[in-house]
Length: 255
Length: 255
Ligand SMILES: NC(=O)c1ccc[n+]([C@@H]2O[C@H](COP(=O)([O-])OP(=O)(O)OC[C@H]3O[C@@H](n4cnc5c(N)ncnc54)[C@H](OP(=O)(O)O)[C@@H]3O)[C@@H](O)[C@H]2O)c1
Ligand SMILES: NC(=O)c1ccc[n+]([C@@H]2O[C@H](COP(=O)([O-])OP(=O)(O)OC[C@H]3O[C@@H](n4cnc5c(N)ncnc54)[C@H](OP(=O)(O)O)[C@@H]3O)[C@@H](O)[C@H]2O)c1
Image 1 (cartoon, each protein chain N blue to C red):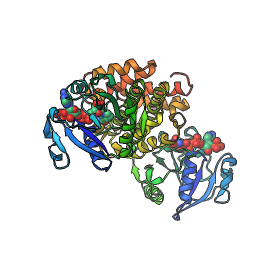
Image 2 (image 1 turned 90 degrees about the vertical axis):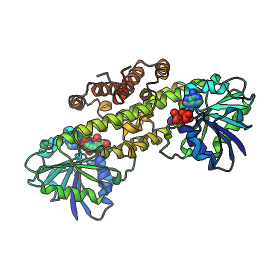
Image 3 (image 1 turned 180 degrees about the horizontal axis):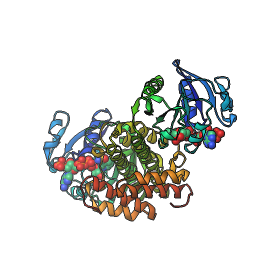
């Protein structure tokens, strides 16, 4: 049995609580948030608190608060030499107060409170300063079905950056597609199966192998037609830049 | 029973043949390709030919050849006043020879011969010049489980263009992510669940609602750090442009 105390009540904290709460191998001893309001509804399931001085002893303290608040919160913990981790993709592990044993428990997924998420689909990237703590974090991730990946700070940062490309930027391309279809009065819904299939394809083959389309074929006629169709200067710029990027990847000349 | 003759032997033709062959409501009377070699292996399942003069009578002729070859092939058909459709997202329906009744049967998906595909996940966009033909094409699509969408030429072009954004360009973002992770020696695999989740999210909520991340939050510190991390000038340009695009969509000031 691993005992855990969660600090913070945002998207990540809530998903972690529910996941840990659903397994017998983890005991969530307490759930802290600076404002008790957001965890009030959990008070029958777990001891809730907004008072750091009340924190008990646990195997792992998980700080899942906004990036900017992590360092400060870690200095306010009223104990030493225990295992304290944050869940951020970009914050330095050394930003945690050195009075405790430090680590990172970074779940590489997109969390929002509304959507349920199976932690089997949440790879967790681990970083520790004290090697012995790796075992604890691995076991903890395993209880909720997550795969674990030991990464160093550079690698975690690269993953966080890559996640912005495959999540935020990809989502923005969906948004641009939505604007394009809407402008002609066609349903965006027609694109949904293609969106899903595009994501599924790279589960098995590399993005390099999966590429198709006018940019890769260097089909100048279609590219020209598409650029003429685009009404927004920004959409045109995105089209040109990503076309050039595909052509660079696949050894075609620049537009 | 709808009788069909397929012309062409590429990705789309092969998938259509297999789908029609799997239903009792369609009879694929013949399969034509200019080079017989590529359809030789099907000769026990269907009458194959490389001779246009041998084409029999059928309810629908589906021309699934390269965009540039559609018009020419349609002029060479040795019959008149029958229903002839192409499968392209961008070719004009009027490019088909007007001696026949013309239409478009555009499957909005990404096809590659290796991957199997359930046509329930392939919306088919229909366009006809003679209204009476719509019914035939709708019934045909229904036999393989596809949804149908009546679109005009402008709308079909917009969908094709939007498809480039959600398929080719999205896939290129996956590729950039692959390059970023590879450069730090981390597995691209760790990103795969996030890729899938990102695509799943917009099946239920709009891309606008699904957006998160530093660009939307206008988190200047993280954006700056990310730009410093990116080694390729082209990757930096993509980061800046898509960040600006997100900020425009969500009413933030430009970088
Ligand atoms: N969301 C994701 O998809 C995701 C994915 C991977 C990693 N992460 C990381 O996980 C961590 C939490 O992210 P999140 O999305 O769960 O955040 P969130 O939903 O925005 O919630 C932020 C939490 O931080 C607390 N907080 C903010 N400022 C604070 C301060 N000065 N002192 C104490 N507590 C403070 C908030 O308390 P109140 O309730 O009182 O406001 C809230 O509980 C971040 O490090 C983030 O980078 C997020
Ligand atoms: N692939 C997709 O994801 C996709 C999706 C939606 C729509 N489409 C559309 O479907 C159509 C076919 O695409 P595809 O991907 O299946 O093509 P493909 O795999 O590249 O196959 C092209 C086919 O066209 C034939 N062809 C090429 N030039 C020809 C010519 N001059 N005369 C006669 N036949 C010729 C080829 O014959 P040989 O075998 O003899 O070379 C081959 O059978 C295109 O209009 C495309 O825009 C494709």
